Image (cartoon, rainbow, N blue to C red; front, side, top):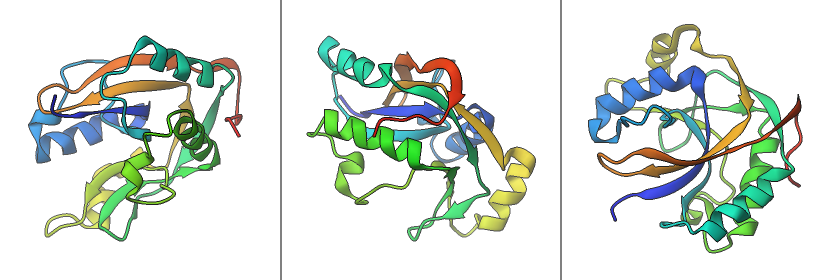
Length: 182
C-alpha cells in the first residue's frame, strides 16, 4: 500500500487555497472525498498503516476528555528548509495533543523523528524560483490571519489518487476553551 495515515486537524479557512496549491504541484494528491482536509494541522504522521478497531478506540479514549479550543493562524512564516506555513497561536494545545498521541502510540514518532519536537503548522507552499514569502502572502490575500476552532481530529489517508478521510473524532463542545491533554 503506497501512502500513509495521518491524524490531523482540518483547517477550513485555508482549504480552497491549499487544495489549489496541491493541484499545482501534484494533482494525484487532490482528493475527491468532500470530507478530506487538504489544509490541516498534522498531529501524528505517519501513523498506523492499517488501523484496527483497537487503535481507533485508543484515539477515541484519548480525545474523549478534550474540549474544542480556538487558535489563531498567523501570517505565513518559513522553516529553514523553505517550507512556507501558517503558525497556530497559541500552539501549546496542539503540541499537547501531539505529545499525548505519541505517548499512546510510541511506535509512531511524529514525522519519524526527523524534526525533534515538531512545530504545529499548516503547510502552504515551498520557497522556489517562483515562490517567495511575499508571493504567498499576496496570494493568500485576507485569508490570514484567521481563527480556527479545533473541534475534530481526522484520520486521513495520503496516497496518490487515494487521499481520503477514514475516520473522524469530534471534540467536546461544552464550551470552546483551550483544554488539551497534558
